[in-house]
Image 1 (spheres, rainbow, N blue to C red):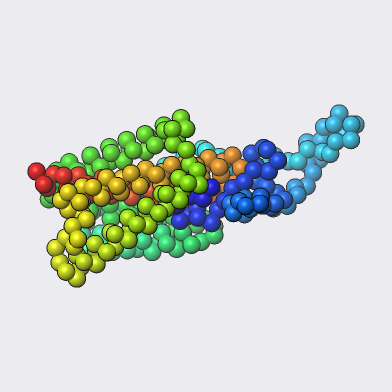
Image 2 (image 1 turned 30 degrees about the horizontal axis):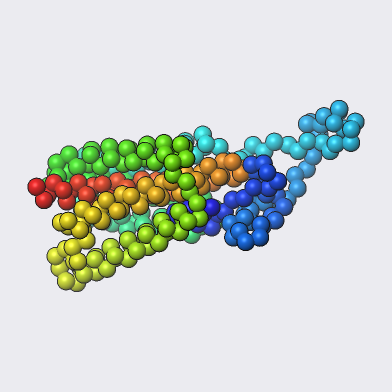
Length: 287
């Protein structure tokens, strides 16, 4: 199963012989485009220190060495805490220093470029990911300060609480298998996301060249509707990311993949936070 998150888009996982592990023989299953294992490294050498003399007596081959470079859930949690923590720290700096919107826009553009570069890289680059988190944090802090002080008082804290609530709810529903990530689910989310982004892009073009709110997708009743849709899409992205992390841990992905998992989760959490911030601003400004 592939995630909608661009950092996971080229990575598919499969099972070999019924146990959780990356398929070392790279034998794709018929009709399954996600079955090929991108991490297959061939047959592992025997471990002379793991030989079982009783198994040897029965003609069994010596045990293969246990891999220590596989991604674990602790790795994902630690890397995600680092990236999200850096976003929060830099957002606090931007808030306290009252960073201007002009500089915030520059930080956003830099974060966008860094995010795109990492998304198209085959391997994770921790410095690149952390740099993205730092610049994204500066943008979030500045825009949150602006919205909180001039449009909707308390909007930033409400958006934070809303993002945390969505994360916790999706995680619970995913673990309880209330949300099941299937190929149909993936295709539906991708189609909805593409349509959403296209509509927002068209609305932005009309706003830039025609002035005002463009087609009105980000204000009034339509703005509220699209804000809710954006949050629901973000929740769907979280489910896809959880599936990808679960598969990576179960199938023995390399430890460096935990940085990509952290990057993908950070992208999704930023999406949800911004949609909440926008929705709260619309709701309070319409009172």
